[in-house]
Amino acid sequence: MNLSEPQHVELGEANFFSKLSFSWINPLLSRGYLRPLTLGDIPSISTEDESDLAYRKFANAWESLIRDKSSNDRRNLVLRAITKVYFKENISIAICAVLRTVSVVALPLLLYAFVNYSKREKKNLQDGLVLLGCLIVSKVVESLSQRYWFFASRRSGMRMRSALMVAVYQKQLKLSSLARQRHSTGEIVNYIAVDAYRMGEFPWWFHLTWSLVLQLLMSIGVLFWVVGLGAIPGIVPLAVCSFLNMPFAKIIKKYQSQFMISQDERLRAISEILNSMKIIKLQSWEEKFKGLIESLRSNEFKWLAKQQFLRPYAFILYWISQAIVSSAVFLGCALFGSAPLNAGTIFTVLATLRIMAEPVRMLPDALSILIQVKVSFGRIHTFLIEDELTKDEVSRFPLQNSDTSVTVEAGNFSWIPEAASPTLRNVEMDIKRGQKIAVCGPVGAGKSSILYAVLGEIPKLSGTVELPNKYSY
Image 1 (cartoon, helix red, strand yellow):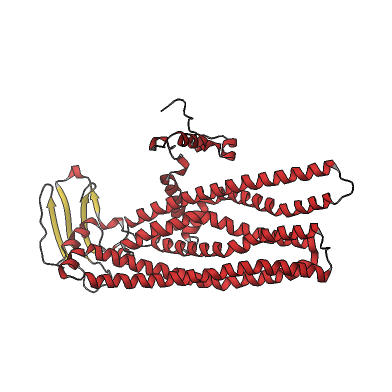
Image 2 (cartoon, rainbow, N blue to C red):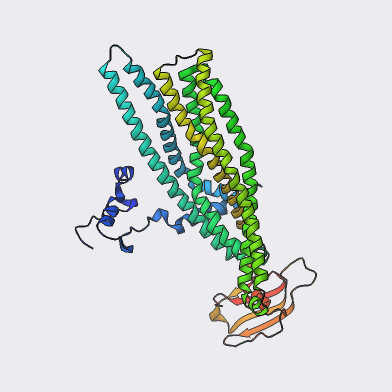
């Protein structure tokens, strides 16, 4: 490494000012300007951002909720575990969101004060400097709080995503046989690639949603402070447009659920077809299964298209509401005579309506994303509470103390425990260390089932299975 190049500073070692101004990343940007970056130039991830630590925190919270016998509520365990782990760090994000919202809403009030100050016959220099200082402070607070809010929420989401991805991976290693039938390989990949990814977006959209609602309410308060009762005619169309979004949100939630179900069906079919590709090729069934995949894909596309076709209505409501609300406010001022329509009032009302436009425009998208997140929370919750392989299916013994490798006595096993006839009956097996055993039989005779029984991955109805505490397969 060239000594003249700037040395990078890791995020965990950066001081308060460096984190506040994001100057800790400047050496990396400078090095990238001088020459192409290599893998060695990228700083290592900080310890608190590692996926192993994120998973251990989530696993501890999850286990504590599972062991909590005082609560019979087993709903939303994933959300409750995530909240338990990341609640404190999201408090600081919420504070930044509040500071940003307050500083944004304060701008129309400062504009109102500036216009009134300019109309004074005798201007006080001190008052002007105070207004200028408030404007500078407001913009600085808005910029810094918004940048930290965006960065910290994305970072928190990254930790949530890492924890859930590892949790899904660890769970699929311990699924029982019945649970494996309910969740195909394609579905499990979907949990990691789609649902866990949405969890990473959750903190940003969650804080954005409630901060937009707060911004909207505070903007309405500013309107009432400036024009008084004249704001009432403008609130009515705004409320109507907001309530019109509610049925759209319910319909989008339904379409999103159906889309995820159809996507799982397609991935399940693709996984089964790929696993059986040799038979499909031998029997020349390519066109038949191609048609099956295309039909499942068209069903998936149908629900996705219905969901996307509803989005323009939200944008139509947004553009219509802006013109209607501003016209209604000025009409209310003229009718009620609550405020003079001078430059200060008009500029302040227009600036406030511009601030109100952001929540009206963003809230439909935010609600849509939160609906998708809720669906993903439910899917991951359903997967993580599935039955696991029990440890008492197989007994362990030290390898050094015995010359026996595998022992099965009077074993009865069944893939479906409720079935009248077990899959394997009265299995007797005694394999010595070093022996080579071949399991022979026709298709469907139970060869694979015997191996699953030895590994403890098929429900045991009766009998004993003993394995050494260390084995490979």
